[in-house]
Length: 484
Ligand code: ADP
Image 1 (tube, rainbow, N blue to C red):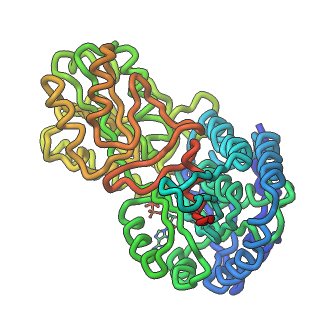
Image 2: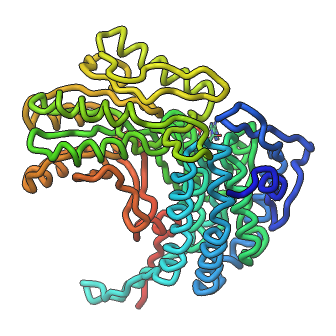
């Protein structure tokens, strides 16, 4: 494994503005912590509103030239960036484990997944099409073209430090947009290393700025007030998404919003239970449960509920907890004390209302923010855990009788990002899949994210789609030229 001290010493810790590493204008820095120990890993530059203005100046100054850069040239830069991330795989993986806490094998998986957006959108860059049609009236012709939206602000969360960045940066650059990235303050190091990759890949100065800050609103509020900004793309909580949507109204910005989830995992009586338990482990435990697609509520037909609960309990009890860089560890720490308290409160609330703990149930003593893999069954309908996003290694099981009740229970939420169903009946799979109010449905699968598929939610889970052929559209305007 890469030596931690050597890796940290090699990292860029300044802002990326105009293709250069820069100090924050007030010289301030903020600490980045290792959630497995609570210790400081590094200090990074703390961007101010002035730094944001400089970055937006640079983005606006080169927007026209970047949009006019041949798509093949933009594609080759993205392709080179993909190669460089893969070459530096071990550094990226260890860094994500250090600043976010996930097990090293999962960080390695994120390198593959996160880098893939760079390759995918390098390929999509040269396949942006318009159309030409004669007007049905016979009076004239219709030419439809696509143009980049313009300078875009990306605000990213801490749970997938690489992929949540590349899923926005790659389509934006492919489409010809310039971009300012504000990474989450918990995990800025991965994004700063990605800035180095883009510099090495030959991205022209100004096209991409990376601005870590401990004072998000102070940095981004003035950007929303600046008419040169044309779009905001955000992944994070629904509460913050609503604030940003209101701000985006000032200059009627294009918006892409990937917000909170509350994914149901529905097991029908005809499911293959071993497959369902495998899927449940993936849907629940990947990323320590800290994923917006994570299964939040397990609705299990009462005919198979006991058997499913027993099998899942055994699997969750066998998981190894510890610092993510250690061999064999499957469950790392939560991101911080606040997150661990939230998870604790949700478990406490459910148990107080009558839920039964079959394994786990408590925080682990420090250092670090560990919480035991926990299974709750007989969870009553009024438990908060069925309504709120857990973002932790806790599964809550509740029973239902028959298909209609299962669908109704799954849809009983204001969120609509992901849903999972397990059944061996193809007709039921299609019927239920079409009835679920969510942007994505996993059918006999516990992991659904795919670079080639449209990722996104309905209801209060968001607006727009990332990845797939849809992902680049979020960064393009449609223009109609009326021809004689
Ligand atoms: P979490 O609670 O999981 O950190 P948030 O939605 O609070 O999720 O944060 C997601 C991202 O949004 C982070 O980069 C955070 O710094 C940023 N953020 C939070 N509040 C604001 C705000 N008022 N303006 C701009 N960015 C914000």
